[in-house]
Length: 397
Image (cartoon, rainbow, N blue to C red; front, side, top):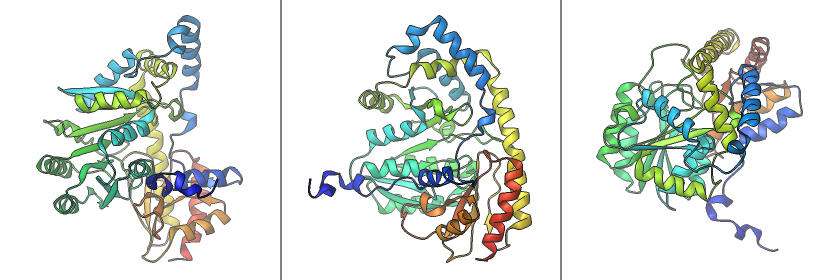
């Protein structure tokens, strides 16, 4: 068939595969120390509990687990999730909640409901590649704003809202942001919500890492300040229990969530019931909050070790964030240094990270930043890998 490029919509034709996934393919072929992951530590998955839970479900209630379920989600888990989300101030009067196949689907379905071709989305610079690609797939115009030590630049947000009348929502990961690891201040959260009200746009608050705090004081969700339903809130059990279960959720004003339910019905009908039942049984019968605390403590140790090794081995010209939770540290090299070039040298030395262009609205432009993950790698590999990476970076200092 000739002219195959005309088969695809312009929005999809211009999309590129996630560089993170492509790096994983390379890592699988080599003995590489990977700081490129974006997942919780597999050794912390409650595998023994999952084995018992799954056995009990399939022995005692196989039909309920293996037939079709309702699109809104497995009712007991949905109620538990509402209650946990309510504790975060992210579920209130006038809100509804639907279980999704991971937070990625929550973000994508929200975009599908709200965006038309040519609509605008304000995103953080840098931001999560999965969300950026979702917005691109619906033909959205992406407007980026800088992420500072205390969150996105609110003045830039307002300037964009004044200039562009097509903006539908602001997308933010305010707590332990991916990829920077930074946390938005309370003042900026309130200011951002004030702008959403002033210019009548939504905020899509993505909070996959918020419970994984290992230092500092907890910060309220943006949704907790929302008294007139401008915030749509996406969450997940992936980062605290197991990402392969693909159980997430989205909450917000009822009319928006009702539309999300409809588009989910034509997307995957429902999130797998067995997976939802597994999550519910774990929360009901085991110490889920204790598990989260144990995970956070382990990640805090690894983060502290990585920062200690970076201080020891990185050139002083390379700056890095100091997260209080989550899974990531963002490194900034001197202007003019291309992280993709550095990655090539690092992989030649069997160390991998994610270059910053992956997290940008313009993924083809060179970037002097890169993301490191500390959750998956062993302490021994952190020491070895950061030493190697430090030697590579000194060539560019």
